[in-house]
Length: 232
Image: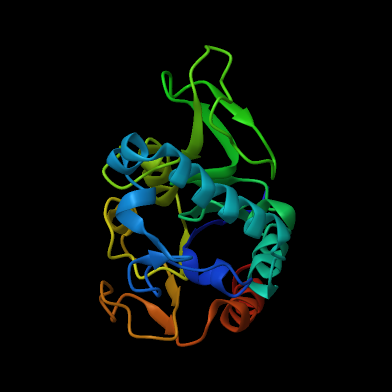
């Protein structure tokens, strides 16, 4: 077993380089949809068809997207270290390159769940969800994603992973949206911390972090190569 554990927090910036649109960079619109209408419980209650159309589109786009060099580099990292990925993304690009321990904070596009019982979850792949599609409990299926205002059930397991890290990496997320933003606070003091972001991070104490001012696809392979040389 590798003697160092690396925890990587990934966000929309890593998927953006595979062509998947990000909410933060699109003025509150995702593919022309108002976020309040398609990513909230009230939006679902008002117009479930619109919500399903939106996520069916995103599911199709995610299925067609290809992993980029950042995803590949993180998968390579597992050959040298124990690696846990905590992602805010709902696509499966990490899994498609072979990353084994991926914790999805905000759910997964390839899954659907019952509107009556959150624990009733099924795999749907890239198939659409339609009105009238029901779970085994007879309730309408909805996307298995965390909408704004909903609880984030995986936040506690994610915090436990971060607390075990010997090295912490943040890629493609500004970490300004809670509860995910609070995850870095669980890291052990004094461990190496790296952030890959072409802009200045808003949250970070610059004395604690090594800032790699590049996009994910170019910065991640360089950091992975550096870590393998220095720590493996």
